[in-house]
Amino acid sequence: MGSRSLDSGKATVSGRKYSKCVILPANENMVPEALEKRNQNWTVRTRVANDLIIQVGDSSFQLHKLAMVSKSEYLNRLVFQKRSNRAKDTLPKIKIESFPGGSEIFELVVKFCYGMKVDLTASNIAPVHCAAHFLEMSDDLEHGNLISKTEAFLSFVLFSAWKDIFRVLKSCEPISLWAMKLQILQRCSDAIAWKASIDPKLFTLSENDAISLNVLANDAENLKHKGIAENWWFEDVSCLRIDHFVEVIKSIKKKGVLRSKLVGSCVAYWTEKWISGSENLPKHLTRQLLRVTTESLIRILPEEENSISANFLLHLLKLGIMMRISCELLNEVGKKIALKLENCRVSDLLVKNYDNDATVYDVGTVTRVVEAYVSSMLKNPTPKLLVVGKLVDGYLALVSPDDKLSVEQFRPLAEALPNDARYCHDTLYTAIDTYLKGM
Image 1 (cartoon, rainbow, N blue to C red):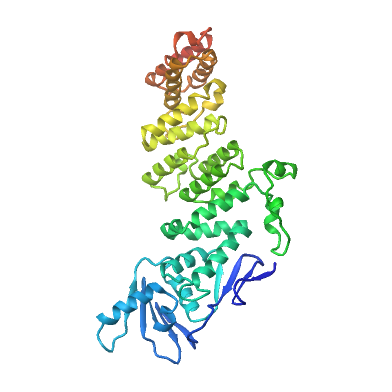
Image 2: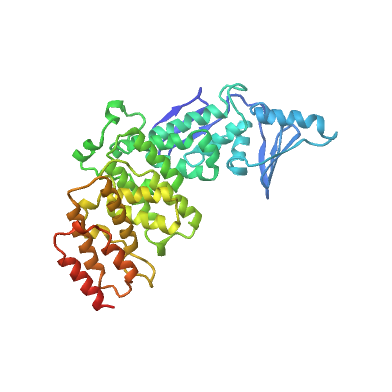
């Protein structure tokens, strides 16, 4: 791919394998002879003696006030404050707490301030951009300062390469508050939402190729005609951690460019990957994090009918019960499933237990849903009550041979429906007979 000048020959963007940018400040106030590192201590050598020490985390940087304060309003204020408080013949020392990206990113800032080459990539652009804002390195101090440089490259990355957007999001994990404040998460989410409905082959085009907005406006229907699966983007999106995933789904729903059923399938895909069963839960997912994750997944479910399968909702309800999420959310999921019962098959109600001492299938969760259905039916009578009766009896017949199924589990489900829910009791009697024989 080609290169693009960002600022009077002082910055170039290269798109060979990954998006990359090499930047230099517009004016170099001080030419460094060397940037030396010993253990956690950095020293910039010039013909002028060092007159400023900045500590970032465990690392110390011996620098020059002129190079740093000329580009940072934040450091300018701190140096001015230190001037009146420090003893004579001592270097002013500034300790920076919670610096975005830590000492590794501050090193890049130092290089920029001294006119040294700085390589920006999709993996460091977010923390460097946040660091530039933290230090208030705006064009008000100097044209072509770090904020404007990083903003230009960040915009380029979000427009061009699909994979690089996820590298940006990954780099935002340690700096989530700053990334959210500067809307980097929102911009990445919007870029993913926009590109998810686009032919992915377009992402490999070189920057010099003419790409009109009309070409980029391909929708999901066009992808079908080209033999491209609509869910081609699921795997990449499923690698995001829950808070970033939620933002992406919100952006997709807001833009409305994809079918709600596809969005629902993506939520199910992410859930299956990260929470496929209680025995497979990732070790880093504490109970509190798992509860928050479950609640977040419920809140982003599409509202449209048939956008989520009943079986997935049952798994989500079971997880919510295990994690003791809010009753409001539990009832919300229960009602969603209840609305689907009239169109369910017995197989849709099968949710496995993972405790060796429990029944094979979770009967309690199904009972809860059937009771929610009956409650809603009393308010809005439905002619399909017999269909649900047949469904429940078929489910009871399937689970009745389980020798771990207690009376307290079997009876509530058998009695959950009103008398007029069955025109024939044969299947129910068979289930009861099978259950009694297994006792």
